Amino acid sequence: MLASAVVAAPEPAPPNTLPEVSLQKLSERQVTPLGEAALSIRAADWKHAETANFIYHFFSNFVAAPVAAEAEFHYRLTARDLVKDTAQWERKCHVFIFETDAEWAQFQKKGALDPWTGGIHAGGDLFIQRNPQLRWKGSTLAHEVAHLVVHRFFGPGVPLWLDEGYAEYAGTRGHTAFFRARGYAARPRAEAVDPAHFISLAKLTAARAYPTAAEEVAAFYNESERLVRFLSATDKAGFGTFFEALSKGNRLESALSKGFGTRFKDLAALEREFRIYATKEYGTAVGD
Image 1 (cartoon, rainbow, N blue to C red):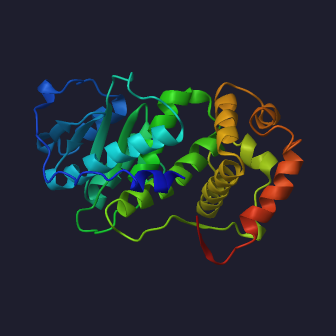
Image 2 (cartoon, rainbow, N blue to C red):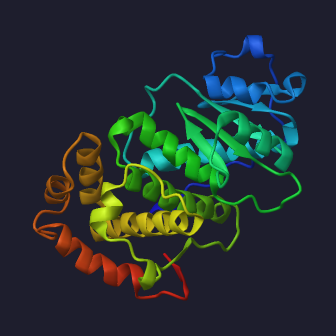
């Protein structure tokens, strides 16, 4: 299991500070257009640092240091869960850390982001808000790091539901594992799907764009996460094969056959089992 594997390997305490370097001395200085938009906000105040897999741009070192510890943790954890060797990946991901709501709102406007966006992976870079006044930071960073790993090692062919569903699944479990490794009695939790808002798998798996209404967005994310959770629990190795097949352009039915054999002969068979799993505990918080 993901969480237990992490707990068995104690993590070092996060650093109190990150060694800062100038922008000119970073190992990789080129950023994407969205990164340039980020750096134009409070342009004179940005500080910079880097770790094994990430380059950080931030305003406050005491905010960035725990982000660095978490990002490295989630990167290793997600790569391990997806059985991907990251040792040969040399380019580092840029992480842009905003603090206040006003800064984040300004970035959302510059980047033309959806108003509900709390963090984003784009073009191999991460953009997050980390409010220093909030003790519990949520699973956004873990979610976006999962997107990064999927982007790097599976490419752009991953369907939207799988990309977001896996990021939700890995983000929740990774966030919990991070705190369990530090002595907190945390457990991953997920909410069952409201039967009245269940999305048919034909519609869910064919989606190429996010829903427009806020309640539909929540339903899309929730059901996608539950489908990933269901398939991974059914056969962990088979889910990996299924994931790889979809990323390479296989149709859903072909990927199901490669990953799960005759367990799900078609999408209708999968939906019959999944609907029961996804909705049976609606109204209660369920752990993993």
